[in-house]
Image (cartoon, rainbow, N blue to C red; front, side, top):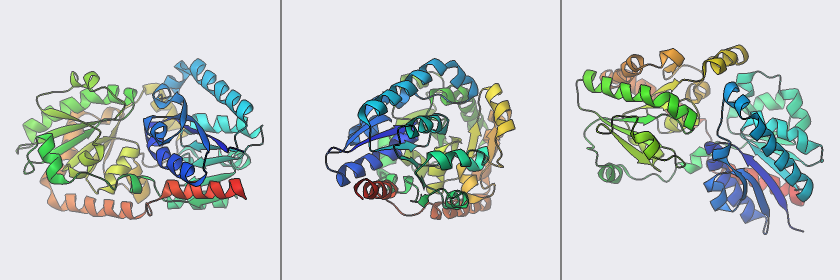
Length: 377
């Protein structure tokens, strides 16, 4: 009988990480039918898309409230698929606000639920853990410190390493990248990563554009700027918001921007960890809906928001949030990397330590192997 698995990844990073999992499952379980929510990477790897991640790209309390009718429809459609197809397993990838609610529905059908890329229980508090113990068959975590959290609450858990270690390995060489981008390899390049979601970009682009102008005036040396665009975004929607004569848009080469920039201005999220992997100094920024920010401060219990700092366990790179994420502050922090060689070196060294904690390549394969063993035992 054909094995069937439903996979739910609601964000761009989940689609990227989920693609390796899909490929590995297809290789290890011949004829398996995989369906669910993902993006072009998971679809290309062989998963049937029931919904595309671009339809799910919403975040924050206020944004989610506006989309509640659609979210309920997606939830109901997925439950109908589960009831009709009775999959052998459900794999949830990150996206906890949706996925933990969906897990509760899935468990009513006595179907094992696996979770790959843990909800940030260390940020939102551990109140979710008793519920997760009831709902989740096994957790596959990507940070070493997460393993202890789940083990302490008797939740089956396995540290599989971080998927980006494998995803990042193929990066264009520096000389070719600079040449094809039309940039001078002898002039400092500042990378701009305003986010992968439309809402993030809308809030960050104007600030980023003003920061570019300020740096051009204050740096005292020539600078080059490139802005990395997520694969699913239209460059035409961005080009009119930034000084096109000073900033070059780069699509499908985000990792090259991270690796070869002298410093990066980056929206908080998985991109901060990816930038840390290359040990590239960064300034983390984030602006959100004021209501979301206020509620978040009440609910979130964490000292830092940037994954690079969280994994390091200390403030390695600056974080500028809400009103602090303004052109003056951002430019000042970027200039510090340009002007203080000792500070720049110390940050790079600390980020190398972050990279060492991410484990070895093959996270998606290890998850697929563990689930495949259980499907056939």
